[in-house]
Length: 250
Image (tube, helix red, strand yellow):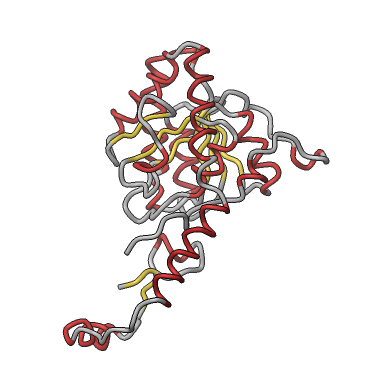
């Protein structure tokens, strides 16, 4: 049985546009920008985003919208080197981790969020956050939430993971929209994510509990029992998980 609603954020918080203090003010350069938010680790494929942005900027020219990467991680140095080597200084800004209030302001000022993760990204809660701010979404097809939250042509685009050319094309297509088209994407993002709030989470959990407690417990399949015994709950650490302080199953 599958129960939906686990992957939600506090929509009431992320949809608020202003903060009572200046601590929530966004950094300069985020207005109308593409934003990338998350740990800078291999599974996020930030280097692909930079490669695609280089193609996009070459095609669009001086009118290319800026790219802002927010976060830290083991690949930060590699990303800085790419920006310098490819002449993207001034177009691409790398910012450290931001507190939620400031990050919320970034989403409300930015035009779109880009996420290029592989299949290890089981959902991608930054997409929920950004959609509350009215961001259009460009997501890889292996990002867990892509097929659920992104409607191609309505509130963003989906591209094949690792396909830099396709990602650059999605960036260009967004820029080719009219102002009205971009506003419609923003409104669509807000409408979609309004259905993925804490109420939905509670409904999903309640349904799962009711299902589990209302059924008689079955015995474990012998083959499953053997596999669990051999596995023993062992975990390994990898480049993606170490930075977050969590483990990935073998």
